[in-house]
Amino acid sequence: MEIDEPGDPFAAQISRVTGRNTVTGGRGLPKIAEMAITRQDGSIVEARLRALLSDDLGIAQFICEIGAGAFPYCPICFDGEADSREHVPPKPLGGIVMANTCSPCNNKLGSRTESALQDWFDDAVYTFYSQDGDPRPFGHSRVLNLQTPDGEWFQVQERPSNPENRLGSALVEGGVTMHLALPARAQYKTGLLKNAFLAACLHVGGVPMTASTAEIRAELVATRDARSRRDVQLGPRAEAIRAYRTGQPANGKPLALMRTDGVDKPRFLISLAGTILVEWPFPDVDPLRDRRGGPIPEPVAPMPALTPEEFA
Ligand SMILES: [Zn+2]
Image (cartoon, rainbow, N blue to C red):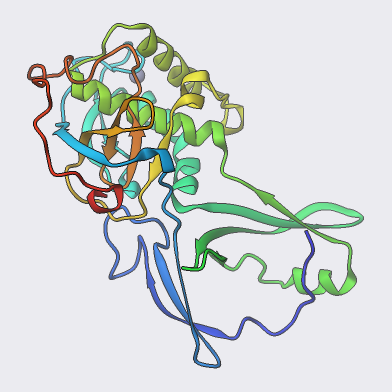
């Protein structure tokens, strides 16, 4: 990647920013949802997080709320006492306590997956530099990808990472390479799978004993027991699950079953706090029939159709 010569710092002021930690932000927003920058010449650049809504998602229809529940055993490993309160989705993604698991499945599985899930949610990447003749990387920073209304990329470095200004002097010396690390896919997809699994089990009222749930539980336990985050392997169930982030703050029901009439066949989705839509994870379980509280009568009563942007 080519790097510009060092010059004056970007002469502009942040005139507005909305995100997770800002006063005007809402629960479950990404780190920066949108911002405006006033340049020295007075012109304003606006940029926002790119919502990830697939073209084939179509219109999503609300079917029913998925309520909180208490499992009599850990739904993931079946081993531990389910004495740990689980946010679904994780709290920074807008979630509230909805279920219970054992402490290892909550804490260890969380530590293996949730930081990458947050990166995916924030559309963050990591950058760092190296210089010829010196293998030690420097200048690490977390960078948020935003997009202007014209579709141009706009990157915000989250925190100053190079106080000694090594980058400036290195650029003068030359031989600098910039490195880019994307969010760890195995980790964030397994994190999405865990949230979809717990929400779907809450909907059913327990863990359905099917092939798909056994495979998902095996992937989650393997991730929990991985030696470190780097050792997390992407399993087939995590690989297959599709998820969409809405870029909106948490709203609506904490968890909800949705249906979208896709190109080939209807698909079921779970809304996680309105901030993420994830596919129904059990192909061998019918969410209309197998439901805590009884089947949903067919046809589903028509509800006002909502576009993903609206319900999110
Ligand atoms: Zn467990």
